[in-house]
Length: 379
Image 1 (cartoon, rainbow, N blue to C red):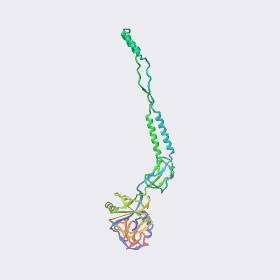
Image 2 (image 1 turned 120 degrees about the horizontal axis):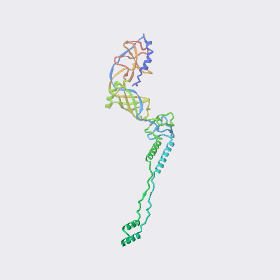
Image 3 (image 1 turned 60 degrees about the vertical axis):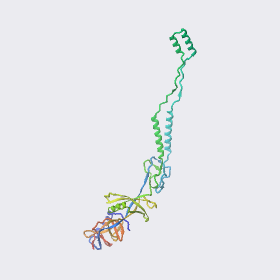
Image 4 (image 1 turned 45 degrees about the vertical axis):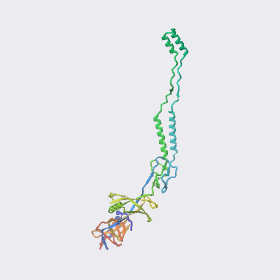
């Protein structure tokens, strides 16, 4: 099997454009083949960009110098591990100051003690009252005089205990100070940052020893599972959708060493990209062998018994330049031209053409080294 190479139309045209004039007026005799389609099982090897399924940016909420060891690219971290510790001294002082102000304000609002009011002064002479009774009964004093004198000898009325009024409490001020304490404690807690995931540090700030509130200090990416994102040619989208629904699709991601990991086709767009004519797809897979690195490109392999009508050409017709694969075609004037193509798998000496050719065009089967663009082609 051969690997698919990226379709680079512009680059390929640039390479061959200079050769057009040099070939004019010459001719070559060679064999050609009309482009046709035939049904074949789907077997695609495509370029894919690998990204982490989960990633996080370490963004401090406060500024300060780090007292922890700065993070470095490639460093492995565990979920719950302290990855950043900002100097907490100034924030601890803010907490202490806020708590002291709250204690002082609360103490000033304490209530005053309760005290007993003194009793009113006065008599209460029972012997004198007895005499008044005798005098009144003997007629020595009148009723009016009796009442007046008895009133002067009545026992005093005791006053009830009195509580001194408490000083006014500024509840608004107390609430403000309580909020200030809470805010200071929250700021202090932000001095320590924990990693939310297991992963690897993939980037750090220019100065990883200083935290700047709101700025990304580092990026941590999970190494497994990973996601491979790639484009599926339009001709294969129906077959892959059917294979995905009936479970007949096989998926793998291939490392440069030739080792691979199996995966699952977790996303297949139903909307075509108008710029490329292809459909976005994603594979989710475990990176248990640590073969793949997020941010890099690798090959993905998709196969299914579902058949698709595909264009194939003899392997000898496909040539390769730095810009990619191409074939020679014969235009309607009988002259040679170059066509950049996106190639697929090879089977029985024929290569699948995913893009670049149309039915009915003539392809040079085994172009000689002397063939140049613009030459007359005799068959």
